[in-house]
Length: 456
Image (cartoon, rainbow, N blue to C red; front, side, top):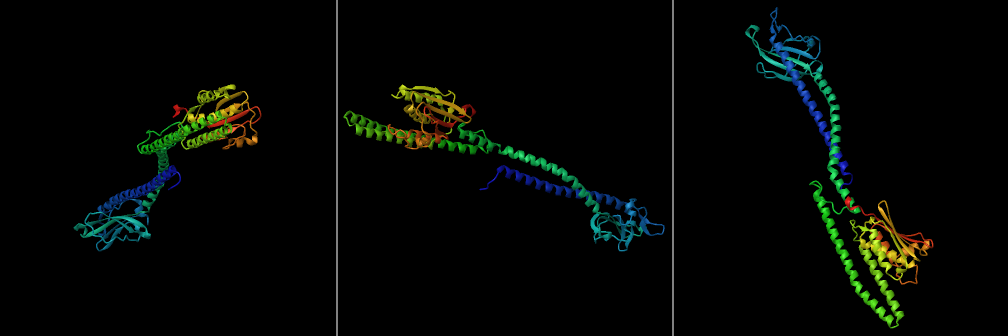
């Protein structure tokens, strides 16, 4: 698997492709410019060679010569780089420009048709490379008959200089184009990867409970991926529901035997077998708490981020149940949780957590129990406050341990607070106890805050 940034790889590939393409374009344009200038040079030389041929005649001394040569001053300057020459077949050089001085243009052996132009690359004076244009002309009888070869040649260094100047002017322009194209490539990569960013945003919303599925609002290339993720989420939801159903079946399966056991305990007490009845009652209570703990553990693997529970409503429900117990009926109760406050947890799991904490508070309170709630950023905080004796600071951890019992005179199993802590942790929260000073005891539950359904 290739690690690293997909955005960086796409951008780098685009930038390298752009630079390679512009480099090839620079080479191609320079070559085209050179060919174009060479054609223009050849056309100019053709005009000059035609002028040389047209002025070929016999002079006053009867010698064949160019009577009125082209008037370009470079033809009169020795080794100027521009030359003309007329040679006979096989007489040799008949006439030449002064620029050749005493040199001679060595023409390749070539079968020329009359008046047909041929272009050559030849070596001139000093070994310079020349572009030569020549014509073969048949002389009239007045000029003595026979054939001559007329040639005009020019140093191609001027062509190379023009090509270099053109390339120098072209490179800054290509550099600007490269910057524009690289910026366009970066924008294209950003636009192309935007759907993946949208997928990440939707997945984050699913994780926080603000959304349930990715949906189909994606381009055609990304939509199959979103559909597969949604199918996986659907399958996961079905597995969660099946697990919760099995947990419910387990609880129902234990309910009847425990009720039978409780009935047996009552009959033993009625017969005066109080010691045996107390032992069996303790065993039954232990079994019930263990079942509750295992059910809580099963919910740790079946939590869903789309869960939502209104804290005030669950607190009212729990307080209403505990208030009807003998101990709870003697206490004062208050619910100070804002009605709109919601946590990302299933209502039944919140009721399990709050029920354990409220039962514990009712067992130790002197006169009053209060449930409070508030939001702190992305977290909701529930406090169950009682006016009981509190817990020594060094024994708080023991109280939250499985089976931890600070009051050994009661009938509890020490699992209530541990179950509450396990459930809260399963939903990304925590349960803590404090302050622990006598006369005040607070159990604090922190849970992820549920997103507003309208935001998903």
